[in-house]
Image (cartoon, rainbow, N blue to C red):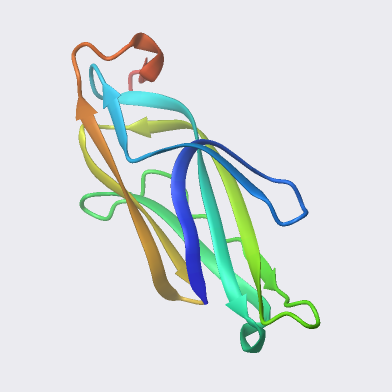
Length: 144
């Protein structure tokens, strides 16, 4: 198994014919103040499985802060790894849109991917202050 793509982006889609379309990959969000809500981002994943790895696979996707505390509910999709005849491997695609993600503070965050209980990939997300960030980059978080 190989994680070929594991990115946060503005938009991603899978067309059903093997193409994963990914637009606007990023690892940093700029905001004027914290806490704030980031309206929409997408997680794009492409995993390659070999013939001997066929079967249903349980994924676990967690979005955490620097202390390992979840900022979104853990996602646990199942995928089917199935390699067509006369092929040595095939890919599985996962596209997950995350809307209204609340960031309580500036700092380091990350998204982790486990497959069958084993950590396979991680991608960082840095949330930084920029006092001149355009207003469309963020929306103030509702009072808690």
